[in-house]
Amino acid sequence: MLDGYQKIVNKYLEKHTKGNSSESEKFYWKSDFLSEEDWTRLCAIYVQMTNTQKEEQMIGFVRDPLPMPILANMSFPPPQGWYDRWIEDKKCIIWIDGEKVDKSALNDYKRDDFVMYHASTLFRSGGRIDEYRVDLWTETGFKTFYEPSYDQPVSMDKLLEIETRVFFRVEKEGKNNISLHFAADPINGWMKLDSTIRGYSNTTQTPSTYHPK
Image (cartoon, helix red, strand yellow):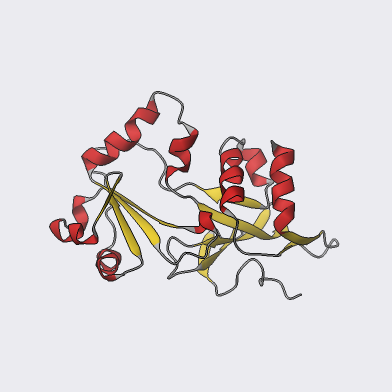
């Protein structure tokens, strides 16, 4: 599976320069989106890798939210500004407790009625669809959605049900990496993650344009 994974990655990799002792490795990409078939296959293999194997990949995925128990007095409602924007944004598709709903349904809730939220692009289908999906869970809905995975293996369909964030490695020096992650919705676009500072920063650059040709 790892060989098959690398073959797909190579379709998108333009070149890889190792650099000398004073330079970092750099990765140049032909494209900044994956086809639906390649996205699905790569993600299905990636979630089965060990942490060590994941750290070696040039293209990877970040799962969010992860299955987790809802503890007493613990919840993660969306920021009010985001909630208001989702109601108004025609590009936003709303799901509540695993069911697609009309956006007007948000008017029947307050943001703190939800204990967890997750915004995902439709990047899996090529990154060309400007709509994006927002999943919101009430406490009851979140437990129903995720609790079955606590006591048994998570099915692949379940893992792929909500789209994960894709990233492209663009630079590596020792254990330090710089990668570009597509943000939770098309409004924010790409973000740069620099492991040396352990934080995200906004960027207008994409994997295909990050390094000057």
